[in-house]
Image (tube, rainbow, N blue to C red; front, side):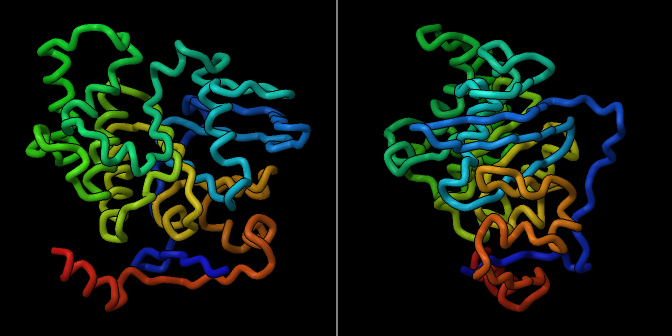
Length: 281
């Protein structure tokens, strides 16, 4: 198995926002265990996410990543241990402050709705699914589309957009409810490499300019190394949880992905990147 790890042009890990001891704790999981069909899917999970950081969760398929997100959101109750979201047990009320982007299926990507309709779906939890959409709601949705550079596409069919454009619209949907935390499950699935780079730079901008926190699940170590402030390496148990820099010096890669893992270091200054962007533009 080969995993590509990206470096900043300087060869150093990305800069991170200052996180002080008194920074607000948004997610706090303490000794969480989850069992399905008699088998432990998560074992003794301790995890924290603070305000204004991007936390990447990496691991193999079946390693418990999506289950972990659902525990954070209160969609799955742990068999043992405790999880807190904004200082309380996760539930409907605390989820009002979360923008959640689950894995998107091909059917959802091709569903015949407009871009604006997709963004308005992000308000249903607050308004109720049968509530009338008002002009103020549409204006708020258009503002979020403008924020992610997609306002001019508002009337277009969502299924006609590229993968990268669809992900930007999904982020606008997640942002329209004014969340403090974004929770993203494999957000780059179906997006080409250039679209992925633009997408993750958008997330970094939201962190830096709006202090919005992001928890994102990814199997792509390169993405996490480049854009996350901290990483949790998960395969039923967490084998590493900390800054992205020291992570590369541990054996967490092998513990999570297996002994046959090969890591290729990728420098963003390489000619392949430059040519790819030239052709894309």
